[in-house]
Image 1 (tube, rainbow, N blue to C red):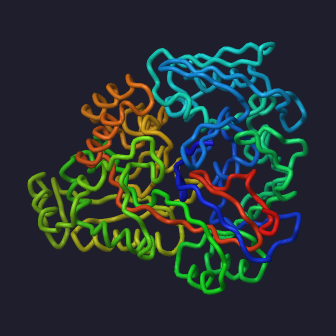
Image 2 (image 1 turned 135 degrees about the vertical axis):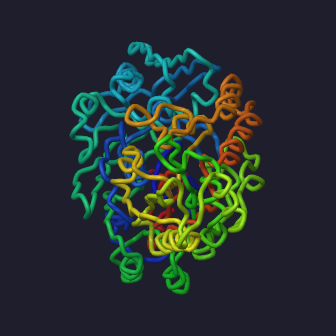
Amino acid sequence: MGTLVLGLFAAGCGGSAGGGDAGDGDTMTVGVVADPGGLNPLTALNASAFMLNRFSYDGLVNIQPDGRVVSGVAETWTTDATTASFTLKRGVTCDDGTPLTPSAIAAQYAYIAEPSNASPMLGMIVPTGLTASADDAAGTLTLKTPEPTPFLLRNAATLQLVCPSGLRAQGKLDHASDGTGPYRLTEAVPGDHFTFTKRPGYTWGPDGVDNARTPDRVVFKVIGNESTRTNLLLGGQLDVTTVVGPDRSRLTAAGIKSTAMQDPLGQLLFNEDPNRVTADPRVRRALVTAIDLRQLGAVATGGKGVRPTRLGTAMSPPCPTDSVTANLPTHDVDGAAELLRTAGWRKSGGYWTKDGRQLSIAVPYPGLSGTQVVAAAELAVKQWKSFGVKVDPRPTTPATKVSTLMAGQWDVAWAPLSLSTPDQMLPFFSGTKPPEGLNFGSVQNPEYQRLTALAMAKPDTSGCAEWTAAEEELMKRIDVITFMDSNVPYFTRGYAFEVDGGGFLPTTLRRADAR
């Protein structure tokens, strides 16, 4: 599948891991940082939910870690600028044994494409105005868009397909699965654990793989404390977990193998609603240059981060040209002060004021991303306060992050976006603002809109020059700033697997001695 998430850990490179002798032969136990919140794949935008859901849901096609498009529930496909046609594999079934039909998939696309349903997927992975038609007898599905859509096929890999009963009764999808994936969600205890049980007879995985050699059960345990996860892995109570802080040295010293995903981590969004102080681009630039982004990135990653080159796509982006480095503001406290003075702010009593009010910002940040990210957020708060800004820090969780951004009562948000293709960025920086849309920061950037319109008219990667220039415009205008990617290691004892931008590839899970 592709990757599209707003969350703690997201898009990354492909790789594999294995080693050790932990685990019990039937159940793989994975330690995760936080509760994923609602698991309904029609509404969930955070990375934790996406990773868990890929155990229960398939896509029409899959994107391999090397960028190749391979089969999913569709065995063949054709595509052009406005159309993608798929022929489904025979024998694909839902959790309850019901065959998955083209008309069932068309119904999901139609549901998302209907604006009154207010799906967050509309305009992001399902283009506005898309129509879906099906021929169940022929086993074919056709997607059509009114305007050229360069990444229509790649975006079809991102949509997790829900079976008809789940589409009709979506309330159950937050705690139960209804898909065609290699596992069923059989137990969900929010805040504690989520158990997935292998389905028999699954033969339609990426590029035709099955699940015959995967564990019978995969249990995700919610364990927020990184040292606790480390101890449990060392003691054999966990088989896999991510560790990004200093505890990773203990695991490395113990000879425990890992594979790393490069994920967007240090990324700041800005609220440009006219009622927020960050509506003024001079204030936005002053806030960014008043803090030391290099230092913040180093703290957030324990000095093991990677400088990003794209906005939201950390590894294997369709358009690889660097859009970030030349546009990343440098640390300049004096310059920041001059920007605020130009914008009419004056410093008095150690604080910046204008028209009788103090410069004050509300800052949501990921409070469960580990001690390093929290420390980096606290350092940013300290640097802003030292500069003369009043700061209201607001820790979020994967379950509350999107709702916090949607509510609009914030100014600068540490909220990394991770995307598969550059067109998926459009709803966040040029679309409708909440509650109808996902333009959290009420961004209106005319040059970004002009360049993306040009890019959308070109098929697949032929519009990369325009996509790159569009990303540069967002950075130049301080609509968003990305300053550090994280290498997130998946440490494992007793199992081997591959990862891509969405986390585990479920059909690659193996006992380490059974590769």
